[in-house]
Amino acid sequence: MDKKTDIKSFQHFIGGAWSDAEGGGVFDVLNPLDDSLYAQAAKGTAADMGRAVAAAKAAFPAYKETLPKDRERMLLRVAEIMETRKAELLDCLIDEIGSPIQKAMFEFEKGLTMVRAAAGLCRYVRGETIPSDAPGKFSMSIREPLGVVAVITPFNVPLIKTTRLVANALAVGNTVVHLPSEMAPHLTVLFAEIVAEAGFPEGSYNVVTGFGHEIGDDLTSNTDVDFVTFTGSTVIGQHINEICAKNKTRNTLELGGKSPTLILKDADLDKVMPLAARSIFMFGGQACIGSSRFYVERPLYDEFVKRFAMIAGKVGMGDLRDPGTVIAPIISDRQRSRVKAHIADAVEKGATVVAGGEWEGNRCQPTLLTNVSDEMTVCRAETFGPVTSIYAIDSYEEGLALANDTEFGLSSAIFTNDINKAMHFAKNIGAGMCHINGPTIHDEAHVPFGGNGQSGVGREGTDADMEAMTELKWVTVQL
Image (cartoon, rainbow, N blue to C red; front, side, top):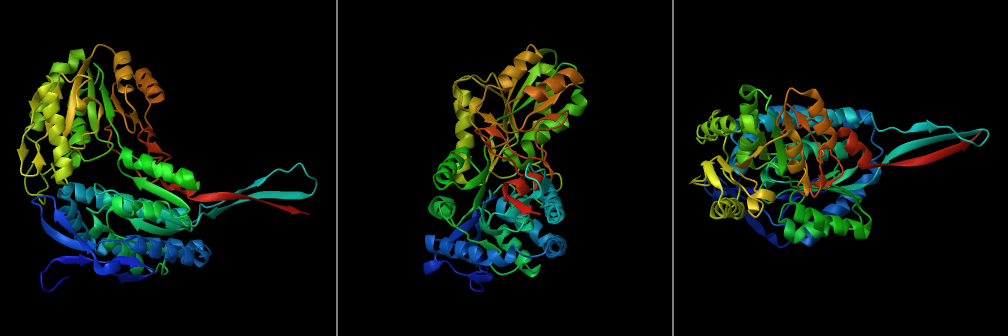
């Protein structure tokens, strides 16, 4: 803490030591609720990133030889320390990125689960015996860590993404260089403190804070980086994918979404409505898996719109530490402008605002749009706010076709009591995830989380990360 200004100040964590940016540069971190100064963080440079990658590379030969029981113990210790620092982590999630307390609690509990699941992964890194055509030859595969893993995380669920991706990489024997969103450096600094206290060796986990557009390429293009995992926009993801392709660097990308929800005429609206609201209003709609498209069979359409509008008008927008508050502030001026532009464009071109559409400070009211047509930006682009479009459909088949009419393919949902249609949807929706009678927003530590098309490359999760962040080696012994 800076005694002169009483403003938090954060440094890089490289090679087990805290350090300023080269040249001493810093940048401001703002509280999104009122844009007040929350903290200042080291503004990373190419040289800082180079130091971090070098530290991770130097630490790898020794770290990859650590025993499973030791990595397991350290990861479980991370979870224990997280619990002792729960209040601090919650405060950070609330004040740094504007999480309402219920969302912050959800993210904290999910983060604990991610770390504990990763601890179990330490003993799951294994190969197999392989039959051989050669007489007297013993054939097998062994699985080895790749080396240096670059982790780039977003602002919206920084604890979930950090705990999952960093812990899984460390669990299988890799070292890590982490570039967090410039809007969530404090959360990552706290996690680095916890990792260090848990006993992880120097250089096994490194954090460089700064702006991705300035130093992201210095990380992803570094030839000493063996794997890149990124969560963020589709545009940046495509850029990273091109860089990785040039260097033949393996990667997983979890990108944007335009996730659809189908509600068929036999669905129970009493059960559907709270789940529908959760799927788009949680954290003010700043979720890649939020449901920004609802397709409702015509017999239920009017009642669904009526009920949804009623819910939208009552969604809590109070104190972020009030358990009744749901709507978060939109994170930045740039993102607020995007949300406003999407709504204005839709209205100008004939959409109807059934609920919301106005702003209270930096928070957008829960907004429902009908009469949305294809020429409107909001129809196809990701808004990343508490804004969703509702369409009437005449059949399940029409709904499936419209749901698939997108370049994205992240999450999806269908509400129905018809198991045949539900399973047909699950098999034919072009999304990486499908939830039957549940919201599009759902995640667990061990599932294959990710999307298709413009929504990403590969999957995250314990099993998926173990396969992606290690490689198989074939070994034979002639007996």
